[in-house]
Image 1 (cartoon, rainbow, N blue to C red):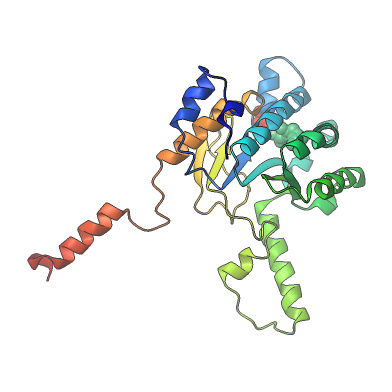
Image 2 (image 1 turned 30 degrees about the horizontal axis):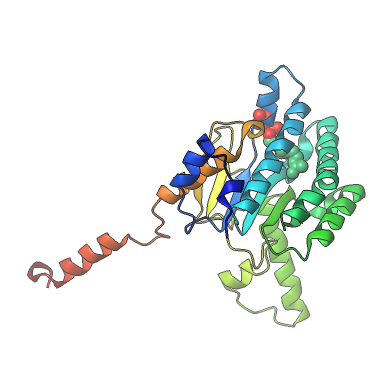
Length: 273
Ligand code: FPP
């Protein structure tokens, strides 16, 4: 049961936004491209890494809010396979911030019944980062609330290639190399096997790109872009994104019901018979 008192102060902007949300039609999975840390820092004449540091507060608030809203899954894009091209100091700071976050926030994850898991080529990260990730994953493994996935050393194309290789190895092992697979089998071998696809993809900082994020899984996701830079992204922005999501008509390639009825009527009319 969602405790509304934990989501917004009475009379606040957040409260007025929560009132507009249909709590029975929440997205099952929200994916977020956290962008604009560098521009946030530049606007304040600060080094880029200060934008990442400030971004941690947004991560904390959004993950906690997602748990309080009882969303089943949230996935945050924290480090892409392409991000290794950034200056060495920036990469090292991002990894350090991640380790610090995991150490400091483990208690909050436990308090909020959040299960944490990384997705991506985790084996390509520094062993010290892998250790912290494994520890947080193991400690939170029995939690039954929000699943918090963090995409690290992640690329959508890399995931698809990894999945193909995994499936080919599996079929070879079972001596079924000629087998023909279907979409469900493929999805069952992605990093996100067993997880519902995102219903809502949020991108901050106004860019209109999907940046190699969850390429397979976002096939039917509704996309919400906000100009807000990630370090400024707060609960109220998540609520706005959910309100926007709930205003969309999702057809999955079909037609809406009233159009379908018109079609049936037209078929039955003398003109079309
Ligand atoms: C994009 O902003 C953001 C990133 C590449 C990293 C996101 C990381 C964090 C918010 C902090 C670490 C995360 C966790 C979960 C502890 P950008 O640098 O590309 O911004 P710009 O486009 O304005 O330059």
